[in-house]
Image 1 (tube, rainbow, N blue to C red):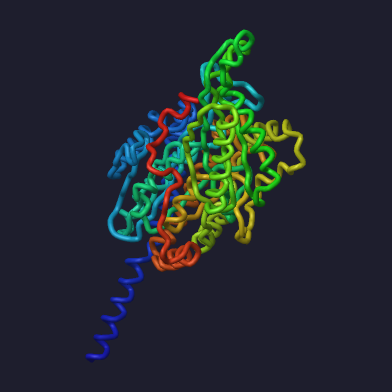
Image 2: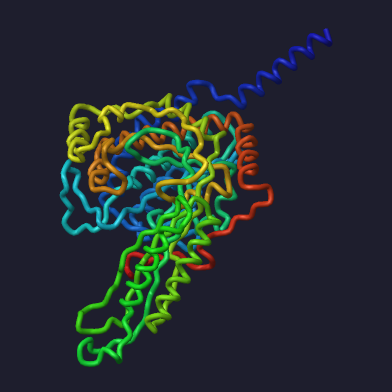
Length: 483
């Protein structure tokens, strides 16, 4: 009798343990159903952000609508973190695991565009969502709200954090938040991005800094008294000439690109001021630091040779990304489960017209394919992102959802046109479903966190200490108002 009683009690205990840690199927479905039922809500929010099209660190309307929506759903919201007025951290739940979701919402300069399938800037607008950040921020918030409802209904222990990260486009907003230790609150972090194909990231990207070099000379009459002048423009051109020569000798994977921001006003006046802005990229941070030093020496040499003076300012900087395979596998499973967004005839025709305008060999049918999980690339390539900084602090993984015309590139008018339509909304709902499903996997299987953390420690080193490429500088809140 005693043994039977113990058996019954053991059965009750195990049953309680299983059901307290594993949500019933209908409860997990509740989070997905919430997203589908609230298509109109998030369609409205993303289009509001798309219409505002606010640049880095000026996303006041965009930040407000997202943070206000979270607060209304019971999240504890802290605004203006890391010296950035448009940054926020929103928390819901209690206990561990703590899962972070990244939200972006800044637009790009020079990409004003209407929601039509040919180039047509919007009057009075200078910026546009050519990278779909209006969709990223909205989907991240939508997924967090859906998860908060699931946590409450299932009684599952855990915390969800939405990181409102401004200034991804050239501002490195996440690097400032990383410097303040904000990502250390999370056990793992997920992000997502609209794209022209659907896949989980396996590319480490490139470490990158953006630096402005400001040269100061002496003005003079360029014809009557040129000997009295010292041309700051000469210094910029000398610097650019030397950096173009150095391209032959830099390591594989390094890239440098520049624009002359200010080259003077009139040809008959020796320019007393000129500036040039560089983006420097490398496969890893160590190589990047060497590249920064080399280009800095060139700037000094240009100033010395032209008898001018140079000032250097790092505007933004981000590390290469560490790929976390443990989390990537979770994302891949859910990416395949959700599938690519389904466009109706009107939406398909809209994207097809844009696709065909690029005269590309990329098949249009690619928009229906979920790419298999690729092997991790040993070196970074392509673009850069401040998500890289996050990945050195906490296990992080991300994915792309099919959104744009398969033939279009990043940062184009074509992407702006698509992002502000129902096509963009379908993409963000799909992205939110992947985030929700992946977060639930982690909430009910916390061993995933242990494994993901062990992988990160193995890749970065046990004694690693994060160091920002930004130094002690404050965020460049007016980065699009100067230079």
